[in-house]
Image (cartoon, rainbow, N blue to C red; front, top):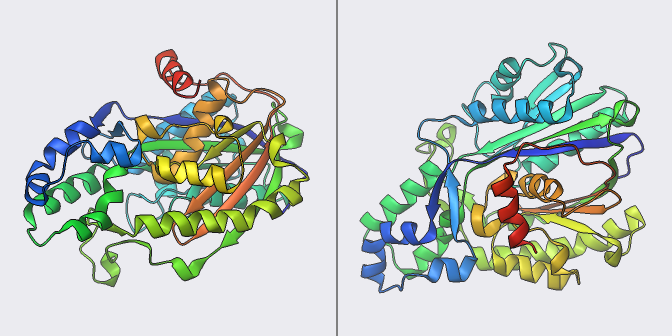
Length: 370
């Protein structure tokens, strides 16, 4: 797929204040660690995650998404009345019905003539939303649209710890299957796309590719949804992490050459990469398999963990604002999500608008990616 008329005005992110270190999390898992004779430090060693952040108890995803949109509109100085579509695209949402996007749209003060709906596609939700907005702009249906999402990991983390400590049937093999749940962090991110005729930045979304490997759809699953007889939010997530890692990277490899061909790029012409942030083993294997320079890949994982659909756009927001990607850069968005699905986008970046991240936050990630 190629686009002639779509621009990415800006990515933005908002991060929770509360930090849970990996050391603290492992201390809370002490009954399990004692019973299974596990050594503290294994979680950070295996994942590269030093800490993750969580929203305050009781905060709904939509509540934070409203603030993230307001930050995005302030950053871009874009008229909310010109937003022709709003997509809420995180795994987490407020209710089964109506769409979380409805409440967010109302409170953000966007146009009443907008298309408003949710998209769910695991960790690729926001990228999937970007493709929908881009298509609508290219078709001439709208002039601008926003994709937003907020992931909240508090309940998953607390439920996982409680069950791991109390269920004595949990052995090392079962622990491996819930291990990924302990890497999840919270975050919120949004992106504004516009028609190039009204863009202030000229940041061209050039195009991209999709790749599916849905035979592997059972490698990462949450409990059954309530409507299917499940117990509701906050239940365990079961993941065959090792197999998912290798199958996901193999699927990305299938997509990468067509991605380069579609954009008429060579791998060494990519100036900055923003990928889904899962773990250091995944990151290293992906870069090695695609024969890409790891120094061009912006990392947030050690301080944010895996923030689901918001991980990649958060990396883009922090990386661009910190100067990792500068005007004139060719940017690759490399998304891999359970399912397995892959989405890759290429952007020609020309203008960086002033963002909303604090200097201390930006300095921390600059140092991490130096």
